[in-house]
Length: 291
View 1 (cartoon, rainbow, N blue to C red):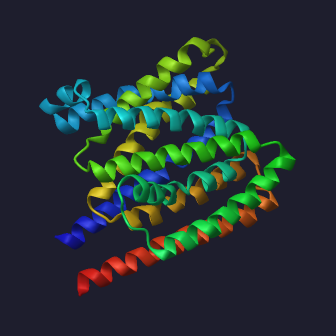
View 2 (view 1 turned 135 degrees about the vertical axis):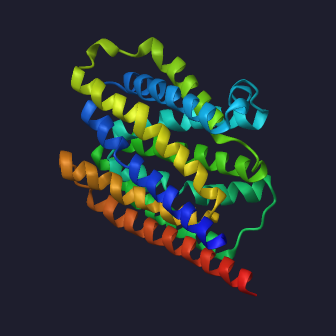
């Protein structure tokens, strides 16, 4: 039964990552200003997340939607901020930069867990942090020349926001993520609405945004919240690295956006380090279980 649950966790997590990987491509194809994209993207996603919460939790769904705990409200606010920063990053730097930088979120989460939860950090994590800082320095130095520094900074802040969410989830594993995600979309939509210019969107834009907001985004998020129930955090972290490879690939294939040399150098260094860190942690967890 344990092996079956593990396979289920790997399957749903991978499906969620693959499903959400064209997110940045669709945002680039639609274009427009970030406020319009944020309102349409999150406003539509909110509707599906509410329906999913009601379907999955049935009678408890309505109660969970309007009786969020303080921890759940914190997650909703931080996820709203991280979503806003992510969209700004995608529109102001390369997709490769955005996903490589956002990928360091779990590492920041480990460091924040040490500060706020008192959890010990293995020596390998500090070594990985040092290597990743070198990789980020290479990427940021390239953006100074190309003009994408603002987008890189937004991606880094978004990664910090996601890492803060990881810390809260570790402290409160009983949290139901769907209501918090739904409210995060509501907060983003309210913030973006005054400056959104929906009249500028074409029928083709709306078809892409409906696909993203009603199907891709909420279903992918729901799948990714189910994964950690069946597999370990290192395994989730390892699978999440797929998005950092797929998202730039879609943009390259469709729009021809080629990552810069500094992005490739720093990104490869960061991805190899994160994959190695997750693989090492998985090996140690299996060794502990065996003994």
